[in-house]
Length: 209
Image 1 (spheres, helix red, strand yellow):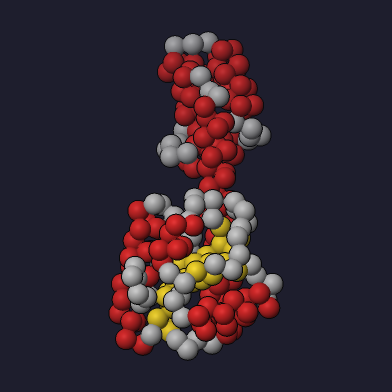
Image 2 (cartoon, rainbow, N blue to C red; image 1 turned 180 degrees about the horizontal axis):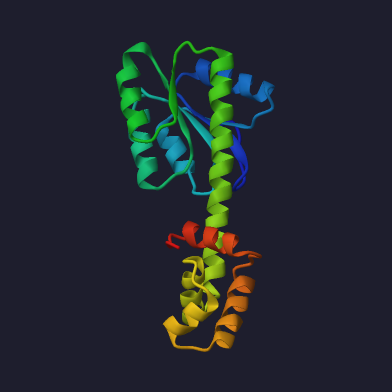
């Protein structure tokens, strides 16, 4: 292994048993100001893996011991969110295509073009950033939801469904004034300034307005 990373710091992880390929790819990425962490086996990477890893994984399909495909399956079982680019020899293309169907981002054949693999890696890093941002937003919405009372959740769902205060009052058997109080608390606790924002939060949390 050539480097270590802190939680949520993007890095390009290279897993390849071919030292020459590891070194040349690491040099290329570092020359383009990307952080690199290289491993010579799937087993070593799996031992180092943790859920806070951010960036992407450049993974050789065929290696002694645990293959790249086997590592991919184990990472999926652990719900890893790292985007994966497979590096393949010509005869391994069918396996790489199969991996794409199971969630890998792309594959590239050896010998690969520097510009092509850099392009793929930058795409993966962008996707990883977007994924982590959404994951953080989902966690933040869940945090806000836990602050709502059961009645406030009912009112929120009805607001998101487009009901007017009078309709909510009739449906829940409470006064309009009470609905207004709950509505204000929902907007405050959910940290939103409009019904449109509230609807978005409800949809992202798995609710249906």
